[in-house]
Each structure stands twice: as C-alpha cells, then as structure tokens.
Figure 1: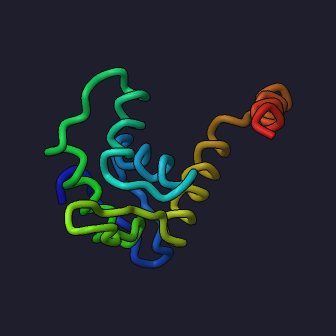
Figure 2 (figure 1 turned 90 degrees about the horizontal axis):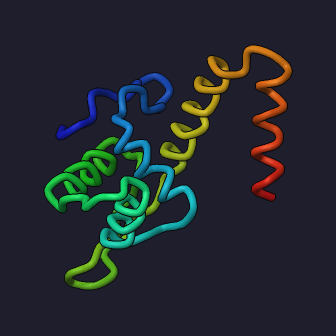
Length: 119
C-alpha cells in the first residue's frame, strides 16, 4: 500500500487513512468522477499540482480496501465511485471527529450552523 496503513476487518471502517486518501473519499462522496477530475479537485483544494504518481496508487489502494469502486469508461479512462463501505468510513470519521470537537453547546451550535449553511 502506498499511503494507507490499515482498514479494520471487523467493521470495514477505514482507520489509518492519510488525509490525502480521506480527501479523495470526500470528493467521491459528492459524485463519481474519473481520475483527472479527482486530480483537479485535489489541486484546487491543495493549491498545488497533484502528481499522477501520488494520485493513482492511492486510488488503487482505496479500491483494494473496497472503499472505492473502479470502472472503465473507455480504454483510457477509469471512473471511481464511493462504495457503501467508503460511505460508512466517512461517517465513522465524522463521528470520531465530532466526538472530539463538540465539547460544549457553543461548538455544537457551530456545527449546526455549518450544516444549515449547506442546505
């Protein structure tokens, strides 16, 4: 595996994914994309070029971990889609993050406000 460390066998939830891999999952949570579209989203987020040699091995790792499904659009282009396991991994990460972040009513309200702003 290139950047991933492990996946929990019991729950299928991703545990030791890198931030880069988590960002890929978040991009795919919005909608399925082909590799170059994922690359563009990451470059917009990071503000710098994302090397193919970093992106595709990480996509392959996520596919191997069954967090992402890869399908062929044409001979040269693959499409990537978040799996149910990938979706559950994202929810699990949100749950853990929120359990650490929401320590009082004001912080909880900040989260509610963020969610309301997205509606």
